[in-house]
Image (cartoon, rainbow, N blue to C red; front, side, top):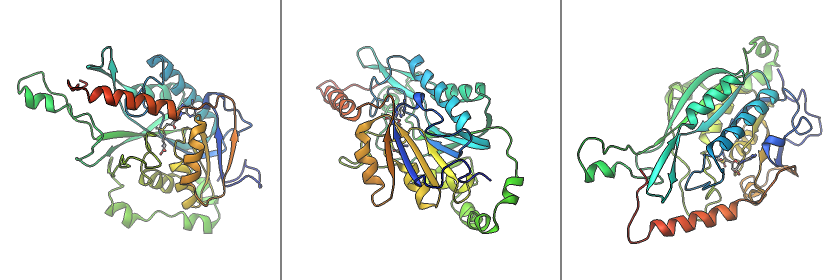
Length: 315
Ligand SMILES: C[S@@+](CC[C@H](N)C(=O)[O-])C[C@H]1O[C@@H](n2cnc3c(N)ncnc32)[C@H](O)[C@@H]1O
């Protein structure tokens, strides 16, 4: 078992580094120190969250490659990297057409090439009334003929990669008290259908003024299930794209340690708010930038264009 094996006894139970993940070194996180990664990388140039953040799709894939190699280094043997991601429809040219980018397939290929085992894929299904989608299915209603079909998307993928085989003897060696308090409630698991490859979970509602606005945060329930299913109490959970700090908040609630990496210095305030009352330490590292305000200005500009007299639907 690995809890605290590499962390100094004095390390705080929650730690957030503000910097570019690509520049992370073993000074921030030691090799094999982490028992689980739960994260959601930025969605490539997502119109509602990260418009034009990456100059090209290849730049985006370079970030995912670096994320894969950093994950391989910091994860303990046999441990899991859980990635919440989805293919992305991005506007092109004058904005009336969109191109769909295969983030799920490309991320999977990159993690396999890095040497991870492909353990599973869970489909996260949001409520049918999910309001943040582009209502592309309206096209076939206006033109009820072949070739006008574009579905509305209400799902994302939760990809589970494993860092080699896990040695289950580690669990047998764990102190009985820790093992028993980390036991999974199988009645709840069956009742709430965690046992399936489809998880129906309400998304974070996109209400104006909410602390997660413009961050593409996932709901607490996703890290809650993953942390319970893949870690013991006291082990360390890492979120390399911490955003508003959802994974860290839940890790702490479940008695795990949490480490986050986040490039955007403007999210310090957001994370502080989300972890209100929790003891945590932040440190600035290479590559930290200020992003949020400039991204939100761009999103508002694009929304006002979308509200112009000739409405545009991205296809
Ligand atoms: C989809 S959001 C994560 C949201 C998070 N799961 C939550 O619940 O709030 C992705 C985050 O990755 C951050 N990010 C983008 N590039 C990064 C990099 N190179 N290093 C570290 N963080 C980065 C973005 O600023 C953004 O906050």
